[in-house]
Image 1 (cartoon, one colour):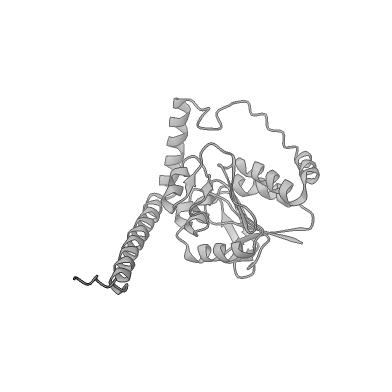
Image 2: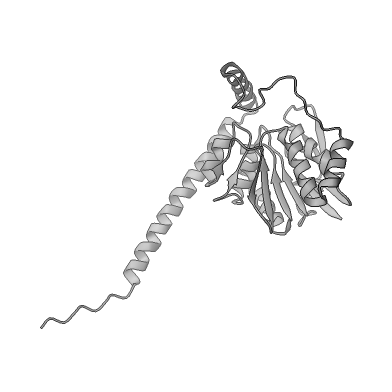
Length: 263
């Protein structure tokens, strides 16, 4: 059995998890769990769609696949120490740890992406650098770490379907992945071609930015995002001071070379 744990937190983006869920549930012997602090209803970012968390963190200590979606409240939950601790522990035994959209910020906050390449939603990509991550904005799927305990991140929202298909190929083989693709009839042919910053016009970028900014303000996420940046800045300063203090201590305790004797 392959246990798949998908984190569902208040304010997640529905397509971020529904896309890969509908792919990965078709893996052989798949057991899917929607995981949160406690089982129960969890509202998506729309406030209308309700998903049931089926299991708690404590009930799901060692999934085979760990998936963290993004959402308008990602920055808030990236400061949730119980969530971050569970992500760290689950990653240690998971074959695959994955994120969709801004879910990579949660992986970064847990320390899983430091010094690695990763992607996210285009509005969240700059945030990754704060955690010592090399941000990638021009790739749909980015493998941050190969086996063992592989980590893979993908771009925003709809990229979660591509991530699910990619994981299906890696886990069950190309033939099974192609069968899943046909099962869900995944044959994207969008009527417009502005799904990436490199393709969108200036007017489209401005409108999309305004829409997302309005959602961020409406969801009360300006303070959490500022606090997340502040936390990281403090950690960086404290770490730098600690390194300096250790260096001074080592220099003071190091044995001094004997001076040469004068004739």
